[in-house]
Length: 128
Image 1 (spheres, rainbow, N blue to C red):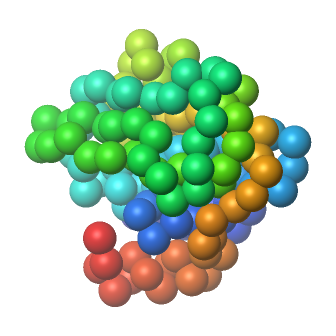
Image 2: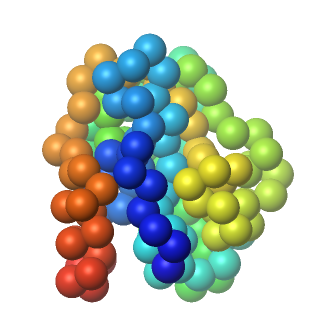
């Protein structure tokens, strides 16, 4: 696994969020999650205008191994989705912290977020 980006915040369910207190928070799944999922083949994401709640299910990620729920790390209104990842879900595996981002939210509150060091400790323990 590559180094965990230090400018992100994380959930124990392996989602990441960039800029959780800003006007637009970008969300994706971590490299740890992408590796555990296997080859991602389909994504069901919230639509622009949908409201998501921190810690609540907001979509699904389907891989060759299973279907897993996607959890929102922040509460707010979805303002954008990554159309490129809908057309090419393998981007989640290839570049989970970059081109494989999933959606953006105008956040109003964040859930229980971990800094990069706490997330690194969580994944070092092998916690799923």
